[in-house]
Length: 217
Ligand SMILES: NC(=O)c1ccc[n+]([C@@H]2O[C@H](COP(=O)([O-])OP(=O)(O)OC[C@H]3O[C@@H](n4cnc5c(N)ncnc54)[C@H](OP(=O)(O)O)[C@@H]3O)[C@@H](O)[C@H]2O)c1
Image 1 (spheres, rainbow, N blue to C red):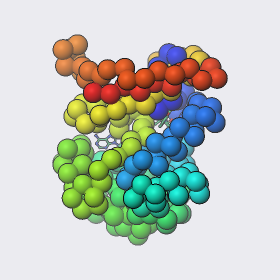
Image 2: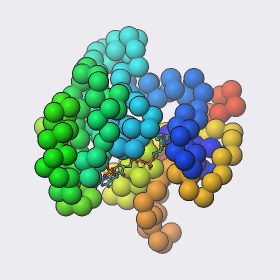
Image 3: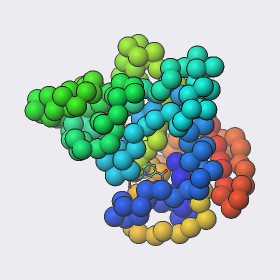
Image 4: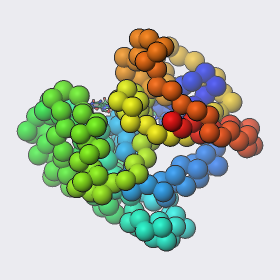
C-alpha cells in the first residue's frame, strides 16, 4: 500500500488512486512476483481499473524460475457481488478470476459474475469469512502466499482476523487530508489498544523521497 504522511490511501472522493512513484509501482510488481494470488476489494478493482497482471516479461520469467504460475491468480472481495461488469479486469483472461462473496449476493449477481468468467465462492452470510476463504484458496487453488493490494475496507477485514503476516507500506511525502479519505485499514476498527494488531518494523528504506517500510508479525 502507498500512503500519504497523514495516513490516507486515496482522496476523499476516491478518484486519486496512484500515490506512489514508479519505484513504488515496481515494488508492487516485485511483490506480485512472489505471490500465488493477488487480491483487491471490489471498489479498488472498479476505481483503479487494475487487471492484476504479472507486471511484464521479466516478472513472468522470475515467477517461472521460482515455480509459480506465469500469472497470479486474481481474487476480488465483494460481499454483495456487485462489481462493475465493465471493469478492465473482466476483459483479460490470462489467469482465473475468483470472486469471494457472501449469501447477500443475489442469484442474478452471481450469474452475471459467472458470465463474465469469474469463479464465485460464497464464504459467509453477510461478511466474507476470510479464514474460511483462505483455507479454500489453499486447498482448491494451492495458494500459499497471497498479496492483498487494498483498499482500506478489505485490508481491515484481514487485519481484524489476524491474517496479515507482513505489510509493505510506502509512505509518500504528501498530505491529502479529508475526513472521509480512506486509510490503510477502514472497517469499524478495534476499540481497545490491547486488541490492536501488533507488528514489528522489519525494515525501512528511504529512496528518492519515499519511505519504503515493511512491518511483520
Ligand atoms: N494507495 C494505495 O496503495 C491503494 C491501494 C488500493 C486501493 N486504493 C484506493 O482505495 C480506495 C478503495 O478503498 P475502499 O476501502 O473504499 O474499498 P475496497 O477495500 O477496495 O473495496 C471495498 C469493497 O470490498 C468488499 N469487501 C471488503 N471487505 C469485505 C468483507 N469483509 N466482507 C464482504 N465484502 C467485503 C465490499 O464489496 P461490496 O460492496 O461489493 O460488497 C466493499 O464495499 C480507492 O480509491 C482505491 O483507489 C489505494
